[in-house]
Amino acid sequence: MELNNFRDPKLIKEIIAELSNWQKPIKLMEVCGSHTMAIGHWGIRKLLPKTIKLLSGPGCPVCVTPQSIIDAVLQLEDVTIVTFGDLMRVPGSSSSLAEAKSQGRDIQLVYSPLDALKFAETKETVFVAIGFETTIPGIAQTILEAKKKNLENFSILSSLKTIPPALKALLQSQDIKIDGFILPGHVSVIIGKKAFSALPRKYGIGGVITGFEPLDIFIGIKTLTDQISENIPQIQNKYSRVVKDEGNITAQNIIKKVFVTCDTEWRGLGEIKNSGLKLGDEYQQFDAFQKYQISLKPTKEPEGCRCADVLKGKAIPPECKLFGNLCTPTNPIGPCMVSGEGSCAAYYKYES
Amino acid sequence: MCLAIPAKLIEKKGEIGIVDLGGVNKEISLAFVPQIKEGEWVLLHTGFALEIISEKEAQETIELLQAAYGIK
Ligand code: SF4
Image 1 (cartoon, rainbow over the protein chains, first blue to last red):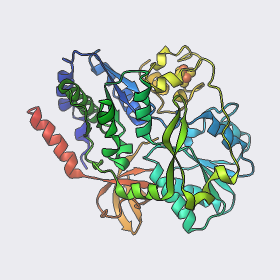
Image 2: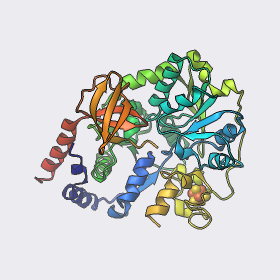
Image 3: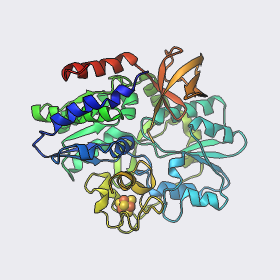
Image 4: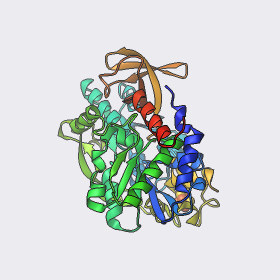
């Protein structure tokens, strides 16, 4: 498969040349950690005129996982805790999963949620489920497998989140004026274009679904500037090589079978209505919240950390006083520096 | 975390597929792409094929751009 075309310097130069004439100051927000990293990696900010600002939104599942989830996981005793590696170093109120593991707690990392099931064959196992729509179908499928195998030792602690409600909440809060969204490509593979239709209809803001190669990102930005100059906000799919307009219906059906929506807390954004997923009635036996009677306790953000503003696009990482001196990737204070896909980590690596 | 990578499906055994990841074979779930055929490319994430990658769409995107900018 010839995907190198999406790095074609000739095409990229043409688009950059067109964008260089852009006059009106605009702010475009990307809401996917992989876009944040790609923009940093390819040095895209430096290739844009000063009038086009790129902001990062709440696009990194690790960064928006509240500390209370980490605290709750650490309260669980005598169980095998299984999760994705990204979550390990996120500080809870007092400790992180990585610290707990170094002190001997049974914490296992997996690449696929399906791998969590094998631990449950011998021991009580709790899978800490974080992620957006990209990751959710795999976790739903894992629950179906657990049910098929009748695994009594398995449950999940769900902090799963869905993107469209978060974007609406951002627009409703009117903390910041956004002129267009660079929409998350791999979330869109699952939910399709329709899932974002309220953005132009209700809020008059357009969005473009795009991929992660440099040409993809420039196409995305160009598409949004075209929408803005013609004043026709809409959702456009420029990642048609993998995103179908209707999304992946098979995966959507599996999600619907297993999960129902619930309100959930986003780190930095607070509670957002209907933005979370919990297990539906038929799958309650796999709900760790029920099984272990867990209730989440309020937490305080680390002193001075501006992750909340960074996640809303209200501040860029260097505007945080801790950035680069007290808070670095080897010694992170907030979640935006912990995750490789967090805005602070991306700025630290590529722009400072 | 939503990182997903392209991989070629070399074998299909019901809901299980084998992909070639740069010379290494890996077993993945095809639960979301039951219609897939061997030889097609998938977008792989946490052990699941999220979608089939359309070579035709990829080519068309590039050709449209090349035409728009008069490049060949
Ligand atoms: S630099 Fe560190 S402390 Fe400051 S906002 Fe980012 S993660 Fe939080």
